[in-house]
Picture (cartoon, rainbow, N blue to C red):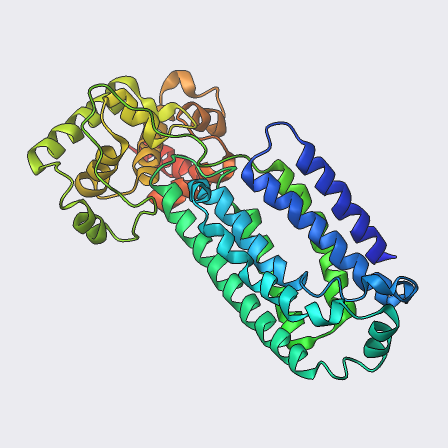
Length: 378
């Protein structure tokens, strides 16, 4: 029953995703993946109930399906984090192994229904080498795509810290959980080889990915506008390196000398002080660069080199400092800590608490209690 339920849910989600308004490349890939999952789960159900033997023409149609899950997970992650990569045709290379599997099993598919049934009942007799090659490639494919997808997620985390002042809705934590779940299923496939466990887990898995995939918003879907007075951009990799030292090497030939960088930093600080742009909850690097009339790459360089932090830390540092200033003002005593935090630019309680403790070592409430106690003792 669970397999039929998984099949129905996967198809239902595929219809919703593929017909939703404003469908993105990521949605298209996810919708296709849901179709593949539904076919795979139903094929197992048909073998389990021997339904497939009534339609022997379709025997073996599921052979390429296991080889599609890894590439589709990777391409879905790529579409969410680097949609620009789909402007070239390189992504099509991920179809090589599935197409090879189709070619590998082509002699089997041209057999008659009776011959196919006989081979199945003899557990692949005569196709031992084909099964060995297929099993080996499946293991390699599974490991490769789990590692490759994890690499994409790691790069994404670094990237958003240099372009966004918030992480809610774009941190892809749910996708990381999906990645772990997919890794667990691959573990079942490679090491346990327990089909009931694998397909039961897949039926549960499809509910999770479909629900959160439908809710996922676009991330890097906007391009930076061309500014009339902005200096021409230098080539900067979309994925920012982890260490500031690496940034310095990358920026070495940008054309932004130290004097100009210091001047831009001064302008940036004045803008933060005078207009308090950090109070905008969804402020991005591009938004701030537009206000300064400079290219986002230059602003990123100034923040990383002169301020010595990434964009996310730079903006949220200002938000925390503003909160620390606002919280003790007499007219703010009637407001909750969270209300004041929202006014300072934070857009969630968890983000506020997490960053405040990271910066001060105290929770917001403990910080306020401590300072009020100190003030009362003076």
